[in-house]
Length: 537
Image (cartoon, rainbow, N blue to C red; front, side, top):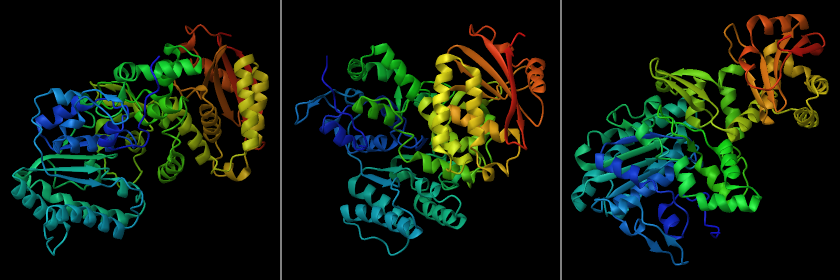
């Protein structure tokens, strides 16, 4: 069996990855296509999806560093394979490259942003012995482009990484956002007019550039974010995982006492499922896959890396999300072009942030169905949504009791004991959480998000021909179609399941289907009665 290889967790330098012997999934076929077609490009991808490494790789290509792309042996004796572009007809000319990196979270104030832009421009002015003009950043940028072209005889390459990071962290502060946009328009606005001096322009971010209103003057950018040809540009495809990374999966499988197929299936459930175009190519989260292969443990790496607090902050700025507003929601293509001034259009924000992905595309209607890409995001999002609904003050003891009851129910199919656990859980909901949410949907949300955070196969408001059921819980030994009535009877809940045909779609599943009616009392703030019966009864 092959020895364990080195995995570049947190390393975004292409040079370091190659020279220090880390594993690299070859993205240079896509890079070759980009640079030979020559357009100025924009790419949107979620954070930690390989955008910075892509920018670093592009820089190495345009700096003419062919040796990094050829096959060689590192100082540590690790053999690095030849990459696609080294075998191509690329001529490896050396171009002057200007890189702007806005990925740092340390840029908080407008003054720090101004200083960072000035430092970046100043570093290239110093490198090329250019005396900076006395005027602003836009004049310095134009002067830099023209002087570098004249000095080197080569047109300039401009690479901008995470252009929107500062603005995304400033949403809610309208004045700061406006000032930041002015800075970016000032620096990058002249690029279109300076096309004679530019060889290549590439800009990355999370939000589409049109939404920020920053590049209105740079309207010749080609947005490749949702083009099928570039869907695999960032991330790890199934083909790449099962070829380039197969030895690592085999090693992980052996160490876990599992087969290769079992381990691949576990990786797929946890990290696969991202789609960035109607091409629907399955993409794995690269940050999570690399962390899992390095540690040998399948866990929540991407979601847990500072995501919960950011997601809670995002949820607080958005309109209230209903149970069916996220997983399975519909979105028109025009929705992705709405102004990103706030979080008032939550679906595109959640998609571009990586919490949702494309699950289906209807070309006739130009309509996207969005949903959670995988178990890592689904469970993590549910936990964050639950924390948001309860203001982060959930009773961990009651939550733990409910978790044990859920696992017991999964193993024993003991519905009465599980219903009692639900009642215990609701009884632990403090009054001040509920007083402004006196309706059945609030309790649906609590129960749904908590079960989803446990990893339950639960669906909320699944459509039937005549309506939407409250909750459907799929367990190994049976399927439970649940209807909760607020200040109404159990009989009304069961009757609605029958009248609306909520259980019909599950009859061919093979597992017994049970309808469960629950009556919730606003006075008692809990379930006061419940009944269950076979769905065909």
